[in-house]
Image (cartoon, rainbow, N blue to C red; front, side):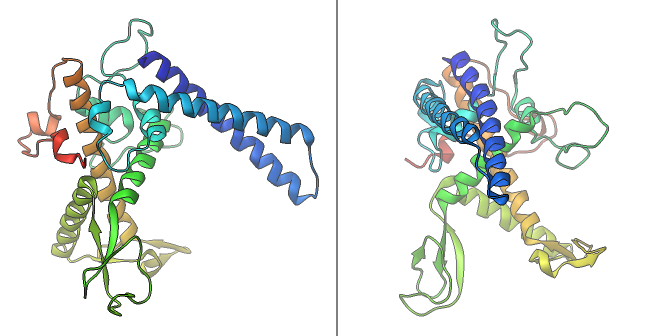
Length: 285
């Protein structure tokens, strides 16, 4: 199963690129009031193949060793999680000995692009050659993190505590106009907790969190300063925490299912940090 799932994930990424390229060509042709029957037929066949592969990934994911854990996490779609776990190995693969694998949580974070390099998240730098992480996997992890928040974050009326999927204008229940985020899942709770910590930290530093358009403009771009930091930046920092917590719990649940030894992240094992990850703390059902 793991190799079949991995091969299907590799295939769906290639198919997705072909589909996007065909859709872009259709858009360009449409701007010229032109139609290319070959492009239309190719896109139709690609979409059919993509649907087949996505369905197979969704079926195979049920046999994954960690399925009994992540299937109980609110916001985990079979397609999203399939593309993540299908790109990960936690032990050497005899069939593909050259494929990288992560034998610790810290190694998994690094492979997914969620390690810390010189105090910052790693990023692509022009002229530096091959990346130290899997950029496609990082994108899929980010997509999975967004899904976790969409499933678990709601808006609550401050006045009457009525919960909504989203809130604009006045509360239809009491007429209140003040709303705040509330969580209906464990990962959403974790997100709000980490976001509150960042807000407290930046307030202590004397930095004000503002929407991006209110930042100082330099050369036509909004930039952060010692006084101001954007809401989007704080959101991304808290979301990164969520994704790292998910990957840590995935690794632990996967190792336990395969009777493999589990090591906590480097910061806990060697640097004295005391936050322990436990998969059962993030299950919703």
